[in-house]
Length: 50
Length: 496
Ligand SMILES: [Zn+2]
Image (tube, rainbow over all chains, first blue to last red; front, side, top):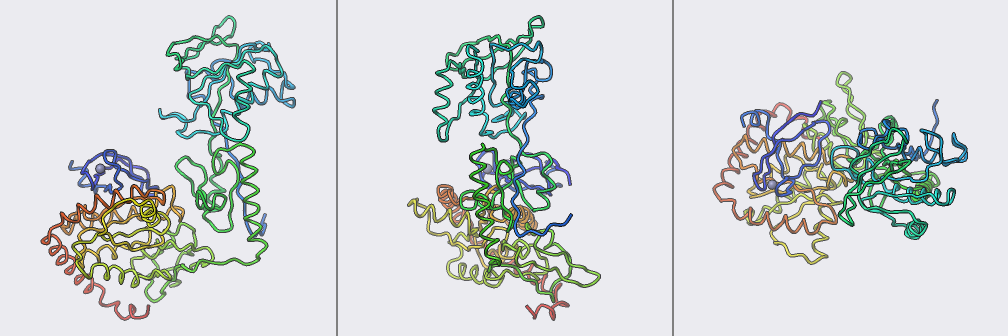
């Protein structure tokens, strides 16, 4: 699978941002605002709605 | 060719960075711009010029030579690599001393951002180079142009010590190129199931305690395959690797982990997920047609537990960290005043040790957190988290090693994927997703551990009784539904 653009949301501060996601090579996530690692990859449908 | 061996030491070395993409330096455009590796060939008695240092454009001995440091290293602009290549500073110092020794009167200038001269005798060498008259200019040149008549190079640099823009005319320019992971190293890496850090170098089993062991047992690493290093460090590492290897070879037998996984063949439905998940390739894939269950190579299993957590049939158990053992801990924690406690799953090597670090550093953090230790965060099954919520836990934290520190190659990747699945599941059920948190905390991050505990304590208190009751109700209903679905298989489930 190739990397694709997805939407992330920090569950600590609520900050949302887009970034690359590769299911075969997941990388460590850290919120660019508060540095929390509780960063959820929003489901595609939700990300598309935004 | 088949060779039977007891251990393998990977010492496949490195490659050097090609500075062509730094077009402003004119490498490949100007004859007299060369790399540090090409410099080595020119000054080497066995090289094409028999050790005579001449410049390519007119074969004259240059009198003014410049060196640009950190070409392709410590870069933040997307070109080259973000890491320090370790050897280039001292290599340049050595090169300038060679030039001064071979060609007295030659003027060498070094353009740098920082000179890193740590290591035995290196500061002395650096000072000697300065005493020989080598000019060190703090500033990385922005532009190099060639005088077409003389072939000389005019370099523009902001001297950050004086704050002035300077122009330097040089007869030859050496680009101190960085070190990169070996470009054809994939075959060896795959063969030995070696994983790499984000910079592409091979990852050691533990950065402090097992620096020459690969995570795969019986495999050791030495030299630049692990990270950029000089000859002395490579020899030190190779000696250590050889010593570590000889321990195994002389013993003739090996101790295996007590904490390994085992398959319940009655429950297995041959899906093969376990074999895909295992970071060590320690699970032989099942064969659905032949109804052959997966085979776990006990000597290769390191005990991360990712297979047990991912198995949809719960057909894999970890010795000493069985599902029922962990569930019992969860139940004990939420037995009294569940609404007051933060339930934390902490991995043995990093997060749990991070908690210890916070303790020994006497950092203050709330006492409401209750820890469940697993060997790896990859062991934290979805059902442990759901069980905790079902029993009334207000918040659950899953914590593990940073990706680069994962004790089990890349088992944390599965933690991350599972967390995404769990958040989606909670969302679907109408449960607030931020009640499940994830943090990567290393053994040295006692500060972070304490900070996370403090932050989550506030959140625990903000979870309302209504929320907890709703969660309990929803998850109890879900469990009922799941039970009904599973009923036909009940007979098989008895034999664990
Ligand atoms: Zn955040």
